Image 1 (tube, rainbow, N blue to C red):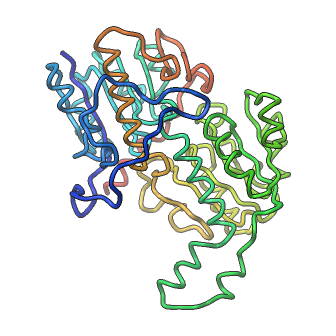
Image 2: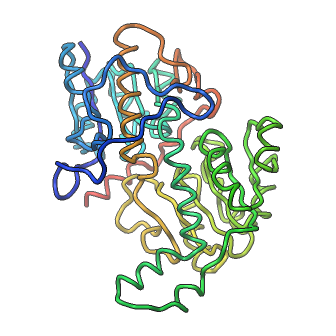
Image 3: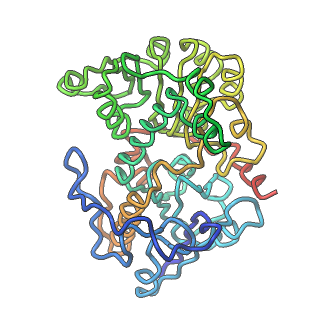
Length: 399
């Protein structure tokens, strides 16, 4: 029987919810493009409830314990004395979310002699040292597409929030003011703007589709070019590299996975090549942007705004400069953890577990690493290597 260690974020400060703002969720049949939603044999939760926090347990306890497996759920994940570090030693399976990642570094993997499966309840497995997973024969899987549309909606919201100066305007209301001039002095329409995405996979393409009705000019760069029919439908112009695309754009949104080729992509030089007063939105991974270069660009006016929900490490230390820099629209990592998305990634996690326990193949689109190499979605989107360096800084959040 397997020992499953599941790392989830803390419950709300006022306790686990007993009621919700809405009754249930819309019923979806499939994702755009035809991929089916997760198909576990059953679920032990009501869609629309909070599953991603410790008390929610991804709805897995009844399922796992009924089959004789043990489940350890914790939010304590960082540092050598954490619950995760202690429980990992004899764990067979680790489940983690990108929003509160349990960093599986090479050092930790080296201590986990029984570990065979690492599941990302969500999308994006860069918190796992993929090279170390390959070297140790660990399978890495994630619930591909489960929250792609959730993130794309968040991207559009953040683009509009920056351009229209929404957050400072809301703050004037909260302070009792009616300061229209202060609000509109940094407010612009996005109509007619040049907007580009770095990455045009499921999330990036969904962002382009949602932006098209705003009568903007669309651009994209990706290692895989979109079909001609999609480019024509969206009126999107392809660029071979991000360096070629970003000087043209008024808004750049990053929707690419983190791996050695994208780490620190938006460094001082890349940001300097952007239009003065451009907006940068990053809901991909914090390490794709150079932390200090972003803060300096906002201070100098090279960037008019920066928004996103991804940081490095996560949780971000309280003195992280992105918390206090000018003209930002940062949130905790929430874009892919709406209650709608949680129902899908919890169901997908169970589907992966069912396949694993029954010795059946895990869906190809869910696989990141298998049989010692990149596989499935991993082979399509990642490059071999490690992006977890520096994750030990997350322990500072507790201090």
